Length: 115
Image 1: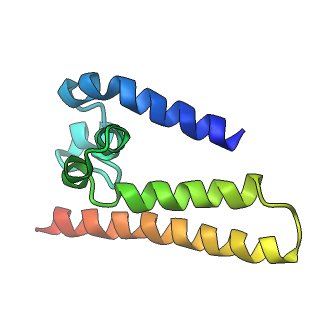
Image 2: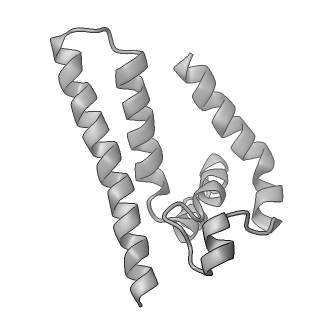
């Protein structure tokens, strides 16, 4: 199920990339405030990653790769690993890793807002 979900997301990102790159922003936060939200650029970065365009993905959102790695790791530990004490340790670690990436994104954007 997890592999199917990830495949669907990456397949969609691959197909939608030409449209997403030219589309206007739909971020309500950015439209209202004029400043990017913590996840602004993540959709475009995901599409670029699906095409193997790492540099372009980095320009859209520098934390796209760590975000997806942490998210897939988190989903893997919760939906694929069997339920036992050792797996619980990995679940906690993967959740912490994901939260660190999200918090880093937030702090990074706040730093941009202040400048």
